[in-house]
Image (cartoon, rainbow, N blue to C red):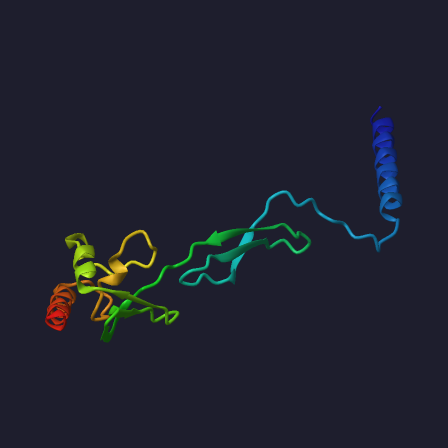
Length: 162
């Protein structure tokens, strides 16, 4: 009985090996493409955001044969105005160092924008508040020097009106 079992096992093993050789004896040039089920993305900025225009960030799957990608908007930064040193008939000239855009405000308008919540903060470029107008000495911190500059400019405006 042991001899029959041994022969049966050997016969099965021989058949398995021979079928395995026949199965892999086909065309070796046919590429095997593994199934790609999970995406891993890398991102790059395809269009940078400016002061007034939204930008675009593109995400692309890092798998070599996958071409899946998507984009998302990068919100516009908003201007970061600071006092250019000029005070004209139009008002106080404020200039954005990023795009050279100019705006004019009166000292009275700037004083109305002043809010103590901005003290010792960096000026904001998001457009959600007006703190970008308040860094008049361009040191990237809104402080008492900025408020003093507004008061001095207001005095100049009052003296010019007389």
